[in-house]
Every structure is written in structure tokens, then in C-alpha cells.
Length: 490
Image 1 (cartoon, rainbow, N blue to C red):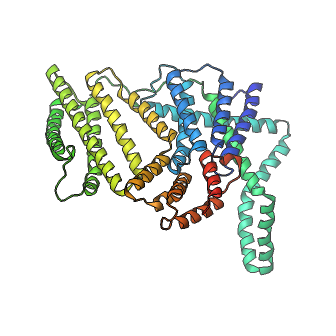
Image 2 (tube, rainbow, N blue to C red):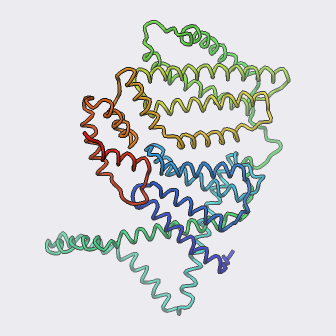
């Protein structure tokens, strides 16, 4: 089908060129900082201006909108290196998920795997639209030319495509044959670089690449595709569903729960009551069992979800038995999570706080919330599991970005130093600007701490080398710590 363009579509394409330029200037001119918020603002101004307020799925859409703004704002207020790298990919995916969802019918099931295929089809449709738009534009350019001129331009383009690589090969051979010619050719790149021709060409390609991508996606957002189905296989009423036998499931659950209950009893006899297994210090015992407990808990969660979805319940008594076994599995998993949480806390007391250990704490809290909801779902069957899991995961991840995790790590280590006199200054120095802020706090309390002055000197040199005066890189934490470092007297 031939693409038909109206005058307003060409005007909107010019708007998308402006948005493409904003994307290039926000993300390719130094380290990303406040520029992410600027781009997100511009992006949604264009979206809302294009479609006004005709949006669907508003409740989940509002949640996604808040999450996107919080994640983008983290580039302005915090400097967590881990999240900065993850969010480079996560935020664009979340934005695309959001704009497709709020322009799709309210009855669409966004928590099913089929919705991922729906997103991919939307992206493909947007790319195809931009490709057809380019072809239409070329036709209009060549429309007013006579056939001979158009053919001449096409031949020139083909000749350049073939001739430029051949030119590089021949030039290389001639440079090897004559040193004077080689010196002359090697001076050309310096002249070209001074003109910034290649950089300008690269940036222009980025601008138009983003522009066509945005234009194509915006143009197809309200184009109705077939709604995503629950399954990609053809419906066959005679085909048997994949189900697990209830007796087998109960047998597995009974075997596991017997072992878990025994383990729980042992935990309460010494670990939760302040006792300790002979031959181990708290730190050794914590390190020995933490990962094993978390791994077992994840296995339990996987089994629980599989059984809830696939186990066949032949009778009401079997159904009740399964619910009891599910509930017992959740309870003992909660005990194991609590034990793992305490082990990690003991390990931190002995060896200090790190970002990885804090994230492990947060992940266990997330699992506890998941298990608590799953326990309710076992007895209230009408509740949806995947909806809740996805929403809680989004809120959990956004919350981690909304707080300064590195600040918590630094504060806890400084408090531990006041209590024990122990602190790993080398770990703090490996953190970003927040770690440097903690080192300066320590210097003000203990200026004679061994190697601290040397670390501060090295970090000051690092800050001087990392100085980026572009507006795109502005960050409140970086600005405050840099100013404090310049005023520090050591």
C-alpha cells in the first residue's frame, strides 16, 4: 500500500528533527547528567502535543510515567555508576513500553509474554513507516528532474560507493611506494580533523537517525494492530494442556517441607536465639550460608510459581492439601530469607558495608514482599500474580534509583568506624563522588588516618581530569563534592 502524506505530517517530521537534535545534543556531548531530564521533557512534550489527551491504560501509564521521570532524574541528583550504565538501556525500553501501552486499548493484557511480541511489531512497523517515508521523499526530490539528470545522480552515487573503498586501497599502496607522497597524505587527516568535518557528519547522521526513528514510531502509535494473543500456537480444542499431576506435586512438596521444617527448627535453636554453631565465628558462619540460602529460596519460588500455574487439582481435598503445602513452603522460605538477611548483617558488621551487600539486602526484602503476596494469592485465587510482580519490580527498581545507595554505604561505614575503628578507605575511593565525599568526612574527623591524604590527592587529580563543563553533564552531587574538594585544606 502506497504511503500518503499530508502537510501536517511533513510539519511533524520537522518537529521530530528537532527532537532528534535534542537527543544528539543530550547524549553525545559529554557525560549524561541533567540532559536526560531535558530530553525526557522534550520527548513527552512532543508526544502530548501530537496526541493531546487521548490515552488509555491511565493508571499503569501514570505509574510508568513517574518511574521514567525518577530514573531520568537520578542522572541529575545522584552519581551511582551501576544504575547509570543500566538505565542507559532500561529507560528507553521503559519509555517505549509506556507510549505503546497508553496508546493501546484498555483491554490489552500488558502482563502477558505476548505483549513483548506486540511491542516488537510496533517497532518494526515504525521502522517500515520511516523507510517508506524516505522513499517517498526521494521520489519527490527526483520528481521535478528529467530522467537523464536523475539517472546521472544515481550513477554518481553508485560510483562513489564503489570508488571510495578502492581509493583507500590504491592510496595505501602508493604511500608504501613513495615516502614523500606518504608524508603528504598523512598531513591531510590533521587538516580534516581541524575542520571537524567527520565529527559533524557523524552527528548529522545521529540526528537524522533519531529523527526518523521517533517519526516512524509516533506515526504508528495509534495504528491498530491485532491484539496480542495468550499463545502463539493455533487454538486446538483437542490438544491437551500442559499440566502436572497433583499427587506428584504434593509428594515433592512434602519431601521438601520436611527438610525445610527440620532446618527451621535448627535455625531457631541457636541462630535466632543468639547461639552459634561450634567452630565458627559469626562472620565465617554468615559467609558460609548466605548464598546457599538465597539460592534455595529462589528454587522454592520457581517451584511455587510453576505448581500454581500447572498443577492439576482433581478434588477439593487435594486442592486444600496443595494450598497447605504451598503455605508451608512460603513460611519456611521466609524463615530462610530472614536467616540469610541476618547472616549478611553479621558479615557486614565484621567486614564493612559495600554496594553489593546493600543491594543483596534490598533484593531479599523484595523477595519477602513477593512471597507475602504469593501467600495471599494461594488462598485468594482471583488475584493476578504477574501483574503484581511486574508492578512491584518496577517500584522496587525505581525506589533504588530514588535513594542514594552509595550515600547509605558511606554513612554506614563511617558509623562502623566510630564504633570499631575499622574502615576500608580503598573501597570508598573506588566509589564515585559520594565515596570521595565520605573520605573528606573521614579526613575532617581523623586527618592523620594512614594513606588517607594520598588517596584524597589521587582522587583530586581524578576529579580534575574528569572535569566536564558542559551543561549536559551537570549533576548536583558532583557539583557539591567538587566544590567541597576545592575548599578542603590538607
